[in-house]
Image (cartoon, rainbow, N blue to C red; front, side):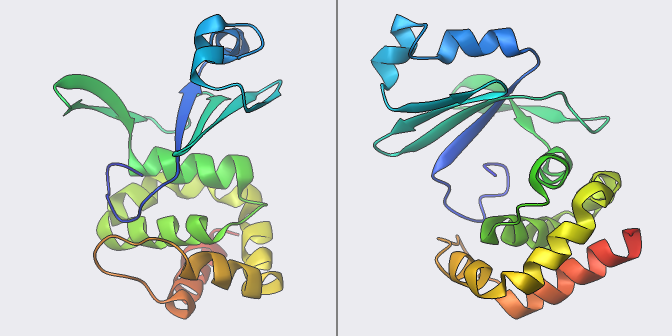
Length: 174
């Protein structure tokens, strides 16, 4: 989540509205994409490019929230950056049933720094909310290890406190 600068990330997620766009970034179909990486994973709804410094995920997905992005100046270019609400909405809607330590970390970071953004994401937490909370319990040791190796920027968060915070955010929605 570039916009919050709360942790180092090893990947970039780019969302496109139509699966046909994936052909432009598929090393099997595009010489330009092959010049970027020959190590990749493809499926009907995404392409994952593996690079030495991280990954680029190009994912087919429509915006979920009413205001999915802001336009910001980054490196002398105007770019669209998803709002924190859109990021949390997509994490919970598309993969909330496969909770990761960084998802818990991001959820709590947004809750603490931008609670109004969290409110806009809440409708999209219902779909997998039960599975997310169940994973926090059933896979607690794995998630704790993932959480503890997050390269936090600035203030760190306590795993146990984040568990309680996630429960207090999601449980009332179910």
